[in-house]
Image 1: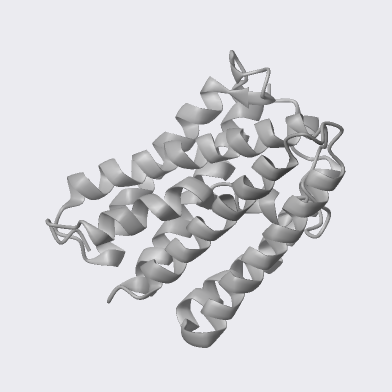
Image 2: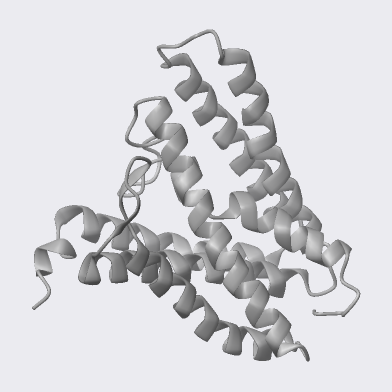
Amino acid sequence: MVNKNKFFNRNFFTRSLTALILAPIILLIIKVGGFIYYATVIIMAILMGFEWNDMINSAKNTKHKLIWKITAVIYTTIPCASLIFIMNHHHGHKIVTWLILTIWITDISAYMCGRSIGGPKLLSKVSPNKTWSGLIGGVLAAAIFSHFAGNYLGSEHSKMLTSLTILLAIYAQIGDLIESWIKRIFEIKDSGNMIPGHGGILDRVDGIILTAPKVALVLALDHWHLF
């Protein structure tokens, strides 16, 4: 029997309530697009920069601060620029929606499977709560979602789209691990406290860091007209 305390604790309800409030707002911003979308992405990049700056200033080892500041610029600008590039595609709002939903579904499924099934740790020294069962569950959920995404996007290349969705699911989990590794270096639990139950902006958008540039690259080199 699954221990309900693994799921139904105070932090779980806070995270869930915040997600239920923010998710429709985010999807609406994507659907509306235009100035509101671009402004949101730019504000997100600025907030990510502020959080990076706060993490760097609390670091005990100061000799690598310049390197971390350069890393911060790359870490924040490339994904956000990719989101703007994707939106400018003729199916932009649909593709961004698919990307965000892929990340959300992967994260939620990985969390639920990891908590309920448990098992061997994925990379315990970086993120002690991540498990192989969570990774596999997240990827499988993304693969199932790709079927519905294909209909939504009107893609005639379902197998390619499924492969890309699975790859994005893996990238999203790697992005999560990278964020955990960075926080471990700076010896902090969360990148900030802006989002109740979730931590900071960097904690919430870690899945976008690797996936958005990947989708932007696919669009730039899309010889199969996948979208």
